[in-house]
Image (tube, rainbow, N blue to C red):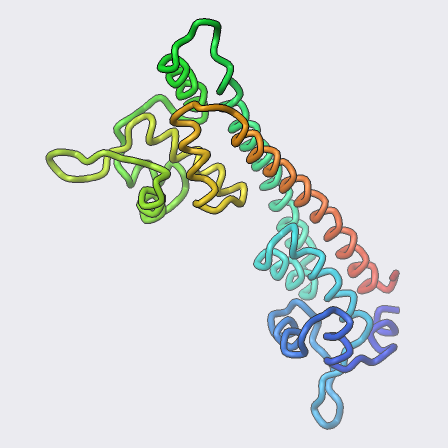
Length: 259
């Protein structure tokens, strides 16, 4: 049955490309990358595709929004090589990352929950201090770290922290003897919040106002808008993972002759 599906309805590269809004070169590139099964060739060397290739392309394009290009490519390559267990493992990793990102969002929300909720009679200075303490729940209590140890803790490169410094997300001081950057408790807090928001898909230009808001504790409205948007992004990614799984299952059935 799988052979029948592969042999019925021969498609030219342009047919496959137009049906998916792609260029013929993109289709050829996808085949070369292992995203599509190898095409048959005519006696003159021209590629011919089948409905099975169309199903593969459907699956890949559906996997892209939820998994990203790299993982979607790896999943399709594994399926086409018969390594379905590896494909499922990669899919599981994407779901695990989404769950981890949801927990990260919960941590940010927990850290910022008390911003703008000072007790009666609390001064502005005390409010800022309380806000900083709330935000510090996503960081450790230790302070005075150099760039290397902090970068390792966050799982990023030291160059990334220096980039964040240029963007105003962190403001480390300098060791008077060595000149090295020193990240105090507030700097570590800001770095961790920046890291979490970057994982949420936010550009540096949008993170800077959030970090400044945490520093000044000047109200919750901008933070609430950011967090709502982050929730929407996670929900969209979850639905994209679901859609990708449906198309991949259809492709797997077609390969097995059950489509």
